[in-house]
Image (tube, rainbow, N blue to C red; front, side, top):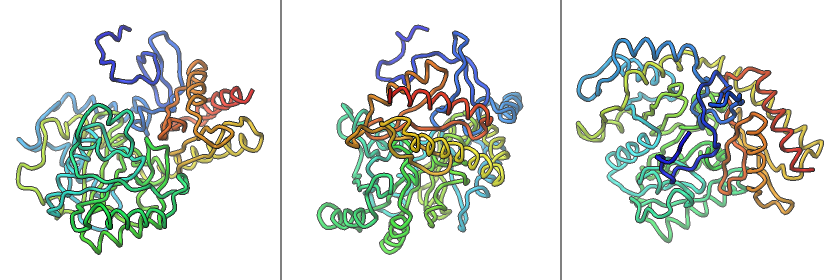
Length: 417
């Protein structure tokens, strides 16, 4: 199809035109079938056109397609927020608001943090990604391509190294960097919040060091600073649990949600401690489309399927399959370009590196092109775009998952030939 009317600033990863999908498979306008390891960039944990989600959308569309919640509340919004408050594993009473996207959730969390603390500064982490709006661009721990040519960004925002076994940055190094920040650049009493992903998505599926997370929680409690955890990509079962933050041994003050919350419908949320979410005056939060009834109905149908048993079963099956293959590839020296396996649960990345250990983005591009030709869609990640991001639906059939890994194996082997 003709792309002349599409902004050239939108980067297309796969130059194909999709027409329909079912669970972990999609088809293009030429009738070619692909196994989908992209999943709408983490949106489709329950697969394309999940039957229960589709039915909920159809049913809701015949009753109420839209109402602005701040004009008059509607039942799907109220029901979903009640369900979310039970689904999120924290010990304190929750309140929140629905949004149209993850970036909008992040923007509203910044407003809440400023209002609740009376402070302005935010501390984020290298490699993080929180959206493409002006304020969230400033949170992102990466310049190209997101911050280029957009000029001065809302602030103040500061960045620290992201401690992880996947980055090689230790807890001690990150804490020293934090000490330097507060000694040289920023007064600790000016900080409203820290924001981080428990497992970075765009950054390459890098898992935060739990020891650092717990030290950060103690520091923030001591200084009256909030912790905002971004589970937009890692949430709703991707790591084998409802969310990734319990792995860190702490609870967020504010939690950002989106992507797989609603089976493909545009929806996000910011939820947190009840007293924090009341910090802004009446009218300080809201939005015309935020919490659209159809998107809420899709989210309710999604949550109904995300039982702890289902999440654990889906995550374990996919994790075992990926880890088993990766270990086989390493043991048999399938390709000299295969580096580490990053991430946790079914949220996994395969690093491609050169002989000297440097990132190999050119090799990743070759793998993606070859995989697409063979019927597999992949997504890059990492600062150098050298980590293959695996985001197949959690509900993928076992034989389809194995077929996709077979194709990936063939493409990686071709790199070594």
